[in-house]
Amino acid sequence: MKSSLTLRRFFPFLRWRRRVNRSTLRADLMAGIVSAVIVLPQGVAFATLAGMPPEYGLYGAMLPAIVGALWGSSWHLVSGPTNATSLMVFATVSTLAPPFTPAYVQLVLTLCLMIGIIKLALGVARLGALVDFISTTVVVGFTAGAGILIIAAQLRNFFGIDVPQSPSFFVATTNVLSHLAEIDGWTLAVGIVTLAAALAGRRWLPRVPYMLTGIVAGGVLAYPLNVMHIAHVATLGPLPSALPPTSMPDFSLSQWRELAPIALALTVIGLTEAISSARAVALRSGQRIDGNQEFIGQGLANIAGAFTSSYPTSGSFNRTGANFAAGARTPLAGVFSAFALLLILLFVKPLAAYIPIAAMAAVLFIVAWGLVDVAMIRKLLRTSRGEALTLAVTFIATLSIRLEVAILVGVLVSLLVYLNRTTHPRLTRVLPDPAAGRRFETTQHDAALCPQIDILRLDGSLFFGAVEHVRDELEALRRERTDVRHVLLVASAINFVDASGADLLEQEARAFRTAGVTLSLCNLKPQVRDVLKRGGQLDAIGRENVYDTKDDAIRSIYARLNAGTCALCNARVFNECHVALPDGSPRERPRPDFALASKGHVT
Image (cartoon, rainbow, N blue to C red; front, top):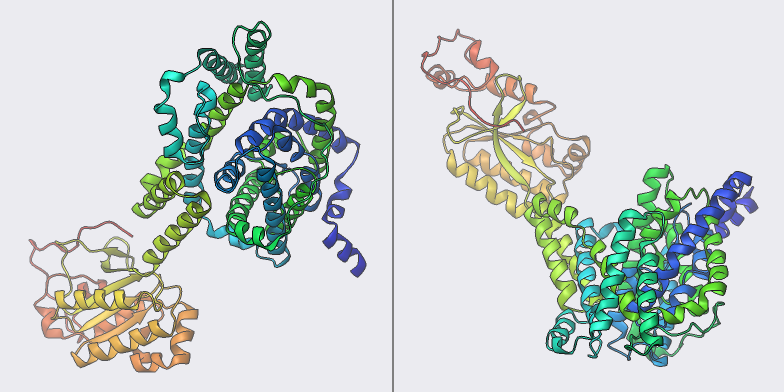
């Protein structure tokens, strides 16, 4: 039994081998063929976007896809080149070497190995939860910015303008705008035809990859133009080999030191893409995803890619979704996809030489616009100011600074927004709802208040970061009502109290007591009560002033109120007010023109 568990740990594909049968093999084979057809234009497009020779994108969908499928945990995740990773590679590495050059390729191969090692180490160390610190807002903002960057980077190719390639949004757009007079009409025509055909194919031929439809249409137009010497439309050129050749990264310490921050940022982006894609499909398939195992699978995939002429890969959301929709049942679909791509390349490799670069730019426009999730952006902007701020900062940072820094800026802002929210718990004055017994509602400015009791509710944890804010809020509310003799703090929403928070409650209880006011607590959660008990604050506050429920608290505090004051009060805030005075004597009927209940929204 122990040896079996060890084997499954090192060879996770043994866990699902019993799912494989004749039916699943047939389904996985068909899904693999669909995935291979989809990745053919994608691989070429994304490699071009990354500044790599086009064949590297196809090689990235071979051995890395097989390794990622067999050593990951998802039944449907398909690994290979992705748009965000490709853009990150270009934006970061192009500052170190010119794209498409041997020096650039060497850097990218080294980067691929480093990313693989980092991912593998994170998975082995069981640190899969780190991805959870990257909020949805950061991902949406980053991918939207990445989409705009892709469009800016491909403008020169779409219009046929001979200007330097730049990873900067502002430089790339400025270069194009300053050379609009140099637009090549035939190249632009090829781009427009490709764009129109791809959009039409996506609308009316959903079973055919729209990229393929667009590229074929653009190639059909460009071929006679070049052959008949009507115009010169730049093309990709022939692919050197259908089989991925071996490659060797650079192991020099200086280069690893230079690439380290880029590798860390690309690791974050790659793992976010992979885990998000796997979880999205798992929700529909009912599978449970092991994030740590996915880290391991993606790490091994990139390590394998570094030695087989690939560039950094990740889980592809588009191909993963298509794989699931095509009926894939096991990870063997990803394996079949790699072999199907190899067979397809053997037949279509000569045709790749005629693919126009303008056509690649056109399909990348569609891919890029798909990264801008307009509906989600609107939703986040309506959610809260904090989410809107995080989204805006991440988006602007993606467009204006280096991408590996932009994603970290987004994460930092989201954490700061979270810390600001948790360090400013809301302290509100509440009253019992007359129509719902002891259920409390937030008071309004015209509410009738009890002259002797002030009821406050704290919504949030009471820890060292929130202590000063809560102290200031208590002081402000205390200044508003100096006549009250009892303050009841409803603690039902306090999930956590640390030593600083417990000390604050003790200090406030002493300060209230000095002023002739009794501080009481109710609805303490067991873990909060335990902290106060162990620290001695429960005794300092007074165990007689700590109640299990609001009903107990109101009943006990009401019995201690000044009966003379109650006799002159017509507020009748509590149920007890309508029965008798605190000393047990009968209550006179209130004046009919007095409002007994306050207005407000129930919380």
